[in-house]
Image (cartoon, rainbow, N blue to C red; front, side, top):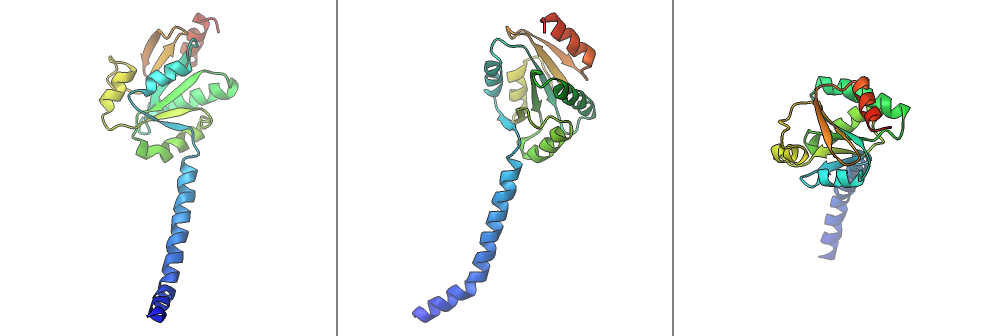
Length: 173
């Protein structure tokens, strides 16, 4: 009986080793995709963002993988961030968190890989949009200029350097 057990174990050993290698490979790939700075954006996330910027102005930019005008804006924001590492920027992708790897690649291509970003993590996207701005209906790109007191001005469409410059001039930065 013990001989049969050992024989069965020996027969299964190559398959068990192959499964172990596959599991380790998946863990490595999974770890690589988590190396970005993307956080799950839920209904309480916007309150956390505002808390992180307590008493400080910031720019919030919402974008999507499928939005061509968003890419124009991301390119400009990446350039600004490379010119000024202290540029107060928050970026939120309105895509499902399942598209995390593609979003991370896009952000990386525009030099935005080092900033903390967010990605919609709830299939009820209307609730997430409402948590940011009850008057926002989902048009992209969508941006917000937040003053230190967190009063804000919303903008739909691609931002320009001139608009950003005017905002920062108005707050004395």
